[in-house]
Image (cartoon, rainbow, N blue to C red):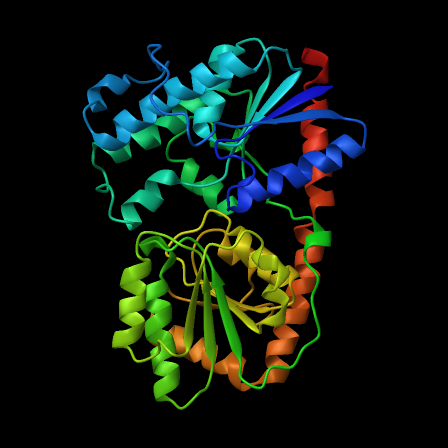
Length: 376
């Protein structure tokens, strides 16, 4: 059975999806499946010129807005690149981005198409101050979900929380499958270590949606309470300078290290003590599972897929979004009690190995793929 895994970002790009799918593909290929990866190179811009039409709504009423116009042009570019590069047929296509799914249905109308919706682009744009809630760009992006439902043979998402979110925008939400992300266990190896000063780490794109301003304020509160720590921030993004300036204003710049983008943070993440990321939204939150697989205690927020990974007080701690005092209290608890921190991390590791292994994902997807064998 020939299967095409259609990404948007190239595999070498940072992020849960782009880093997960190549490992998944490798597992399938080792079991005798024939799979290929496909994505749009970042350098492809303004090459496509075919007209775009949707079956379930008229996108032209939203034309003229930057986000919409860029989305439509990217659809055209992805179409151009797909027709240029793919010269063979496949028995099944599994898309991991709305643009990839819509293009694949357009170019290969008779091939079964599975679409996994990994995140809510519109929610991220709202939180990052790029579009207005309920504005035209928001309406356009949420209308795409209904189009995906119409065009795909199967919709899948990564958490029950995100399935409930999608329910407002599709006609048959009960048909959406849920397959949480999985991770190659061999990439993550907990390392026994003892740090005299607690080491906190966060890995993410530096954008407002990740709540790093809340984290810096909470760390400033920790310092005022007399706690020693080092905060390691791995990632880059448009608000890096703003965050560095905030760290200076809060008098925690000496305690904070800004690394920028690192390709494989899991290589040294196991040497830290606590992973913390106070996100304002997460469909799944792959990095929390990755941190657990590295043997870290995990602190997150009560949103989205994070709450399906972390049971408060059992395998991690959860705090309300934007609650500096609660976050400082949670961090104080885990850095002040090494035994409690160890217990949280041990149970988190056990759950992650059981629930988020790549083996489990491969088994679940294999069943989905085989259900379409009779149709090809």
